[in-house]
Amino acid sequence: MSQPQLTAEEIIIDFELQVNDVTELSPDEELELLNEKYVKICGQKPWEFLKTPASGSILSDSIGYYITLPDDFSYFAENNQYTDNSIGIYNNADTKVIFVLSPSGAYQPYQIINFSDRRQYRNRSGFAYLDLSSNAVRFTGNPQGSTYEFDYIKVPAKLMLDDYPIFPGQFHKMIKYAMATDNEILQLSPKATSYAAENDAKYQSDFLDMVYWNSQLIMN
View 1 (cartoon, helix red, strand yellow):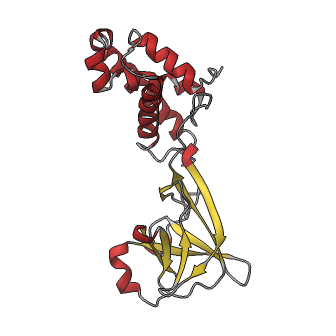
View 2 (cartoon, rainbow, N blue to C red):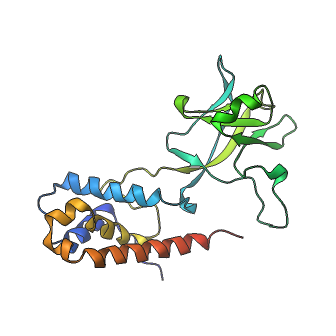
View 3 (cartoon, helix red, strand yellow):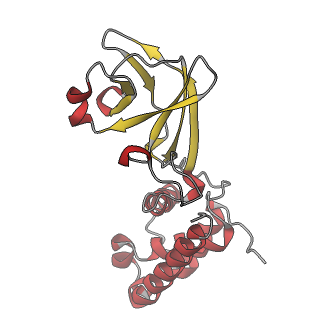
């Protein structure tokens, strides 16, 4: 049976009990600390719950054809492989691509190349690269289509007091353990200092449990 979800406010209440209510922190500072640990946990793995599709129209400017990145983009997710592992990767290419809808109605994969390699692919169709300076994905040639689709890992939105973390409820308490082992908290709370090793062990155990749970969502 899955455990109930906890709101950010409920996690903060549990955290206060865990460290004997560190009154030196204001409510805003507690929420800020919670979000710092929450975002860090989400950023440590390409979790399945952070995988998000993006789609839209291909744009153009004086440089060439491009796609505007989503506001919550972190990095590309694998999206060009088969669950059937008897099927190999085409041309030994990376498994992260931009799919472009061709005039025939089929999605064609455009290989994502390194930004530093873009000159070697100049004016060649079938390739694209990430240009973070302009918050865009740029094509090296003229894409044979006007719309695109790709998958990416998103940065989760910060939590308000009545929001729930994006991952399952059985892992929500991990956040309070991460908060309790923060260096600033250890300096403010004798109880947190006394239980630092225990809180860290509980955090590490819950984190590994979530890693295992996440691995079971991937079909090998």
